Length: 383
Ligand SMILES: *Cc1c(COP(=O)(O)O)cnc(C)c1O
Image (tube, rainbow, N blue to C red; front, side, top):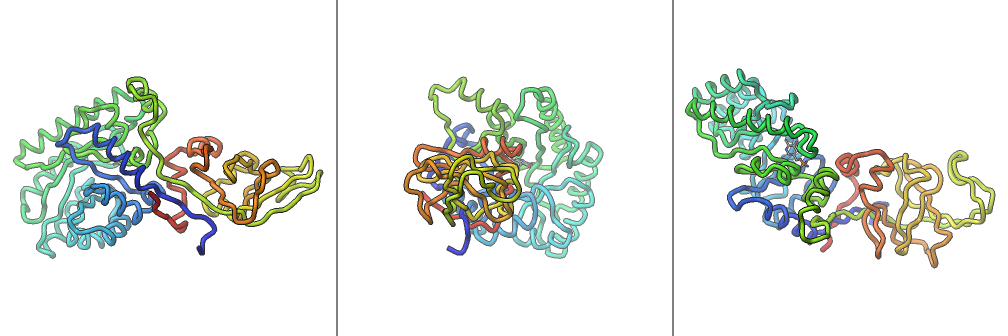
C-alpha cells in the first residue's frame, strides 16, 4: 500500500441504509442518490459503483466535474442530474451524454438552447424554483419567461423536472418556512402546467424532508447524508427513535478510516512531546506515531483532544497534530507493535470513534467533516 491511511466503505451497510430509506417512500417515488462533495467524502467512483449495485439508477451531483467522474464509471442508462454548476463550455458535453441539468437562470436556459440546437439534441432540464431559500432558483417572473422560451423551442428542451430545495427541513424551528416553500412550489408548478408544459418529475425532498415531511416526497427524493448512515440532525434522529418500536439506530455508517503504527518510542517522565510545550509526560510513556495529520483532514483542533483505536483500546492524542503525523499515548495498552492497525474513525472491537464525537471536538458538522476527507486517500470496499 502506497498510502499512509485508507478508508473502508461497507457495502452491506449501504445496502441496509438504502433499503431503510426506500421503505420510507411509496413505491411510485424514485430514489436519487446525492453524491456531491466526493460522495460526502466516500469517493464518487467507489460509492457510485457500489450504490449502483444496490439498485440505485439516479444520481444527483453538484457540478459538471462530479458528473463527469460518475459518468466514467457507470453504465449509460443511469441518470445523472447536475443540481448546481456547469460552465457554458461543458453544456454540449452534458447534453450529448444525456446528463440532466438544473436551470436557475434565463441565461443558462438560453445557453442550453444554443448547445442543444448545435447538437440537434434536446437538453434534459429541470427548472429549479426559488421558493424561499433565496440561494439559487427562478423567481416568479423568470418562471414565466422560462416557460415561454421552452414553448417556443420544443426541439431544444426536454422538461424532465421541476425542483426546489428547503431552507432547513432538519429543524422544526423552520416548520413554517418549509411548508410555505412547499405551497409556493405547488403554485408555481400549477402556473407552469397552465402554460401548457408537461412535467415528468416533481422533486423537492432531501434526507430531512424525507423523514419529516412525507408530503414533499412527490415523484423523486434526493437523499444524501442518510445513505451514508448519518442523521441530518439530532432532532430528526430523536423523533424517529421516539416512534420506532425497535430501539436501535436503523442506519449504519459505511466508513472506517484506518492507518498503522509507524513508530514507537519510550519517553522519559518530564519530557515534552511534539512541537512546543502543549504536552509534558508526567511519567514514563509509550508513544506511538501515526502517519496521518491535518494534511489529510485530521483536524489540528484534535490536538490533545482526539482519540484513536489500537488493539481495541482508545488511545488519546498527545501533543499537537502535525501536518503528516500525530502521536498517541499507548502506555496502558498491552502488546502494541509496529504496523498495528489504527482506527481514526469507525470501529475496532467493541470501541467506536464516531464522526459525531470527532466533529464535536473539532467543531465541524458531520457533513463538513466527511467532505473534508481528502480525495487522495484510497477508498476500499469491504462487505
Ligand atoms: C445536498 C442536497 C440534497 C441532499 O441533502 P441531504 O441533507 O444530504 O439529504 C438534496 N438537494 C439538494 C439541492 C442538495 O444540495
